[in-house]
Amino acid sequence: MPGNSREYWLCVIGPTNGTQLPSDADIPMHMLVKTGFEKMTGHKPDMCSTGWGITEQQKDQIIEIRERKTSESESQEPKGQPDKSILTVFEEHIHD
Image (spheres, rainbow, N blue to C red):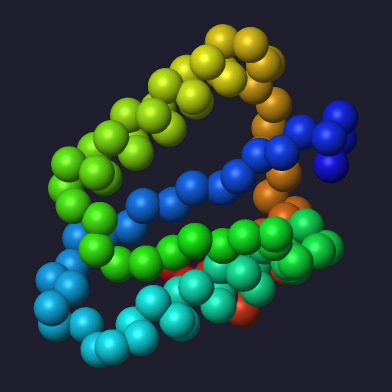
């Protein structure tokens, strides 16, 4: 990692009715995220925390923190063009 910076990726997805999900419903998405991380970075993640069940209030707090961080980063870093070549790693998973 450049400059020993330790950054983490965040995703909040939903909503769904958790009571209608089968037990172990987290496993497929958890494994896809871990696999995607390894393909993109070339190494296994040190940690991967996933799971259904955060509340609407918790989701709002997470989004607020993320938006604040994004605003701070955007004010400090010039915007470049996205590197679309990274998507070739995941072409088999992209469906329009």
